[in-house]
Length: 342
Image 1 (cartoon, rainbow, N blue to C red):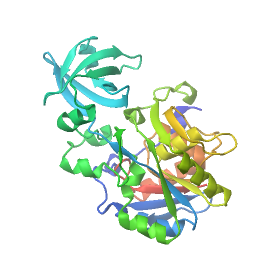
Image 2 (cartoon, rainbow, N blue to C red):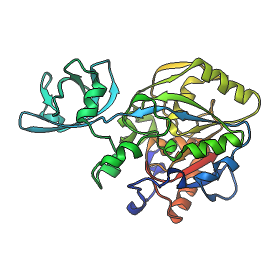
Image 3 (tube, rainbow, N blue to C red):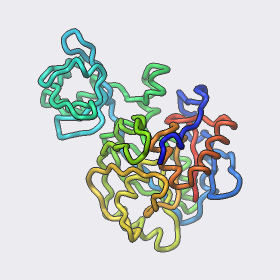
Image 4 (tube, rainbow, N blue to C red):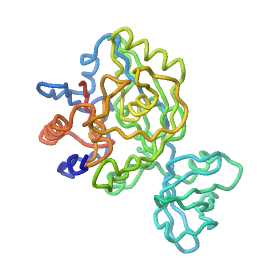
């Protein structure tokens, strides 16, 4: 499909630079398969779902994966996006043309890395020195990797260490938050449980590739970056049981959705999963594992807007986004949410 079909005009003042406080005070646009849209709030979620439905959250934890350093007199910026092994990470590098294989980068606070391998997409594999776990080094020298549409408008600060982390964050490895889950609080989770709505968790370590623009003119020419994920066998069993009894599996966030779809076969059965996925979902895709999606509002021409258009239909999502813009919903990572129920 032509990428320009997924374009729309967004006023820049609708890009949220801070989250709603409290988190579950954000707005929620209910988008059914047909009929009018409903302007609600995240706290209305228990009344929009059915007893026996299950929400699926991503329990990845965002690490402070953005580094600033020097190679000689050259300033080098690095955003880690995928672990290679215990000491090496693949990273998008600012000013990477100043690097050669074997160059040492000083990121300050005693953190050093060697530029090891330059990849076709312009990223580098960085090998970190020392014996401490890389995650410890990042806590010392790194910053939270806010999306460029936020970081370009204000500096990262201490609030982001908490704000850009979900209540489910348990497993280190993401360099971008699964932002739909940022709206959840213990109180909201308790209200959902009281309404008979369950929840499960899986792990997908979100990479910085999620923010990369689609540069191709046609979707078939776009290459996704791989991300690592895991679904435990008992979680897969329980999710299959939910659908077998006629209830729905609702993914919270596109990251949860993409991993569930990666783990499901043509028979619509979710299987245990551990490994990389580079699934790219565009209109025409037949969903196997989920019955709905709660997600934030995405960038124009992005793979995530393509995904929601695959779920609901391109015309339906263009109409929903036009409604959201007219009603001044807040967009992107710290913005408001939508509940998509085809």
